[in-house]
Image (cartoon, rainbow, N blue to C red; front, side, top):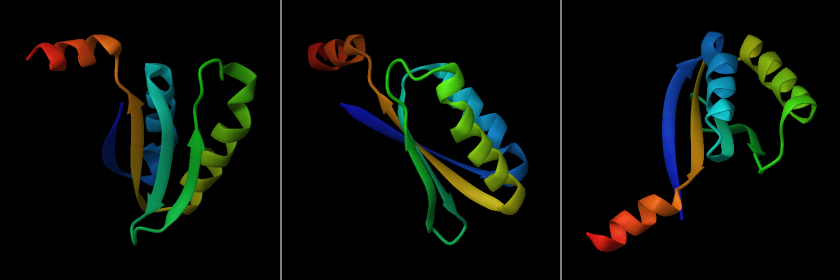
Length: 90
C-alpha cells in the first residue's frame, strides 16, 4: 500500500527537496504542481533507478525551479512491510 505526502515550497528549494526525497529510497512517484494546482511534472522512481539515470530528471527539475515561484510536491511512498504488520496487529 502507498501513502501520499505533500510539501509546499518555493522554487529555490525545489531541487534540494527532490534530491532529499530520492535519497530516502522509499519514494515511488514525485509530482510537482504549480500554485494554481496544475501538474507541471511527474516522474516515477523505481527500484534500481540511480545515478546517471536520474541526471536528466534532476536537470529538468533544476530548470523548472528557475522558472517556478511557489509549488507543491506530492510524494507517493511505498509503505514498509513491517508497518503493515504492525497495523494488522493493532
